[in-house]
Amino acid sequence: NQLWSWVGNAAATAAFYAITAWLLIEDRPRCSEATLAYLVAPHVVCVAVGLACWLFLETHAPTEPSCFAKMLPETPRWTKTRYCREHKAVIAGLDHFCTWLNVAIGRQNYPPFFTLA
Image 1 (spheres, rainbow, N blue to C red):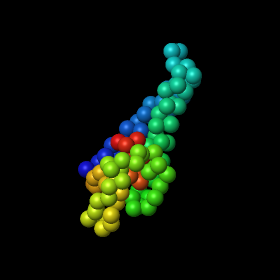
Image 2 (cartoon, rainbow, N blue to C red):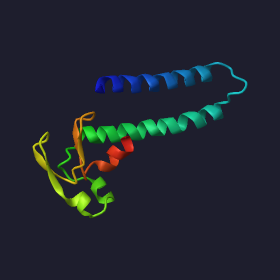
Image 3 (cartoon, helix red, strand yellow):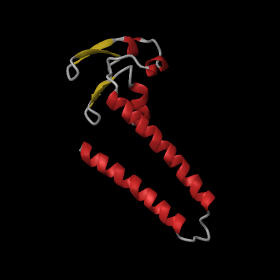
Image 4 (tube, rainbow, N blue to C red):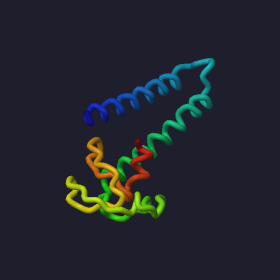
């Protein structure tokens, strides 16, 4: 399922940019370059933010401190530690183990996970 999700997201992104390039190359009377820029710019920003969050989740161990932990309140929900058997470690604010990303989601990586999800 994870592989199909990656393939599907990559195909959808490629299709979007292919259609946009086709609209830019062809001379369209109703589709100006400014209109296309307004359509493409938010998509580029969303792809860049999503890629950065995914890269952080894939490369950062949930047991190591991160700047994202400071974004969450100091409540028992986020300070209570639980044992994660997949990582064989105690993780603060452990929410769940994400099989799609193959990483435990806790206090240290919850904001980028929520942004990505």
